[in-house]
Length: 333
Image 1 (cartoon, one colour):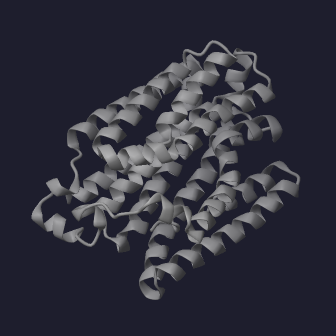
Image 2 (cartoon, rainbow, N blue to C red):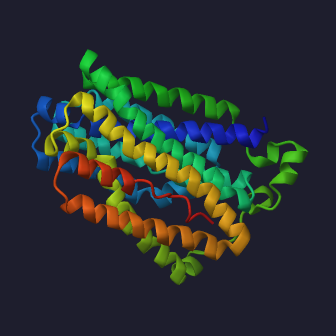
């Protein structure tokens, strides 16, 4: 197997670990709220603590990966957030949980930008959408697996042990990544040739902050992603609690109710990766990216509207699952 495919496999595993660690607190939400005597409003602050640090640290963490190398930064941030995943199991109340989740978000903020940086250095432009598709799909697979891991552990030894287990998993990944990963310059001659069309293989592409901030396309993409994330974060934070407390799913039903939307998203991301690369090859990058993105976001908005207003337990579940089919990898460059 080519080294770049091994690296992609490791990023796929990281995508799963990222969402296992991110979604576990949502799956365990009702149990944590009960044990720590937290109100829904307080639980909202716990969820927001992670999202706040996650959003604030995206650019700094991505910049650190570019400057100091993705081998060092990915190993460090995965180790960091894995420790705070385990520390979540030690939380004794609202304040400790707020601090732990905020610190956890600092580490997870670097996962997507650094993984994207690795892909941009190892894969040709025509392969980037497909490679990103696998990584995004794996993250959704991690979300789908979370209830199957967390709920049995919770029912057996309590919710705290689930955080210890998942924290240990991330620490193992960080060690293996540090030992295995090297920059493209350390690859064999044939592999360097295969990625020579990428600027990361021969040097960093110059991009000033001034030109970036004066780009209308940059701000358009930022606005698009804001509204995309506005809906998506419901699934990453409140969805399991909503299905259990708001729609009456019990623990056994919740396992599958939480998993199915993430499986649908996984399918959408893999299909979207292949489709956006194919459309881009045939019609150009501009059409290939925009056609898929505009269509998928429009269809998902209709499903979200229907889910918000149609009563009934299963009807809401169906539309929310269909909503998650949209691919997230069409806006790669």
